[in-house]
Figure 1 (cartoon, rainbow, N blue to C red):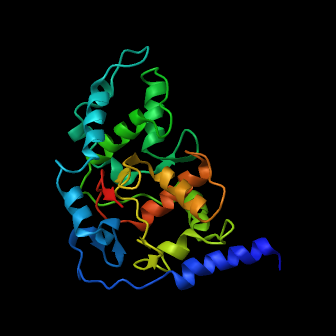
Figure 2 (cartoon, rainbow, N blue to C red):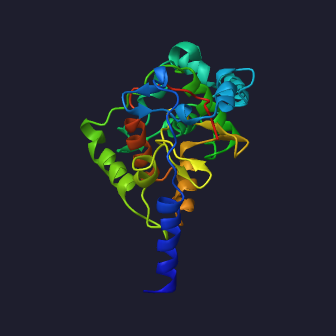
Figure 3 (cartoon, rainbow, N blue to C red):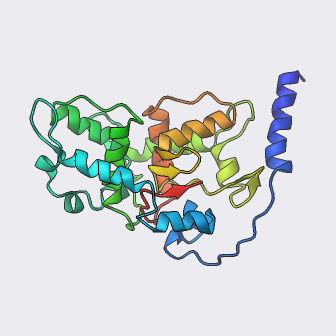
Length: 268
């Protein structure tokens, strides 16, 4: 056995065997933040972090909501249009949108998330340049759109033409990768509610994304979190908006079916 492989096994063991400690569930029922055994990341937060999310005046993610509201009404591109010009008031037109994304796209024959749809509107209808993934503008617009559905249950479609992409996302989620030879499911299914060293593992739900992470000190996308997880298991991350992450996002959104949209959520 080579030294590298042995080191990988020891590192994995340190996380899975030694580093885990059971967290007692002192909260009992989780109200709107659970759907049967499916639990939002909110239920794993400290009382202090919950208080930050609960108060829109304290929640730093609300800054992106405000920025997104401005961008929604801003005219941009050669067509001289704004988002509002086509869709009307966001609180009406965008209500419920977040619950159904990501979804199958008839034009590309692939899965698209809200970020992809925003850029599609910009290039096709506004004749404006697409925003770079993880840019302040695209994050703000995505946060703003998803915020219009806050409190509504996630309900993505995984049937019909979405089936093969859903299956690819599920395979990715359960496939071991990286030097630590770990899958998403090892943390978020097998060991949810336990500690990996100092980190409390949740079910890895995405109903609050883009979310404000205290670690990041800013809002970040679902794909940023996917990339971070891949790096943690010593795997090469895929690019933002890759087919692999789009499919994974669909599968993870389905895992959180029935959980309320919390954007902008606060996470540790």
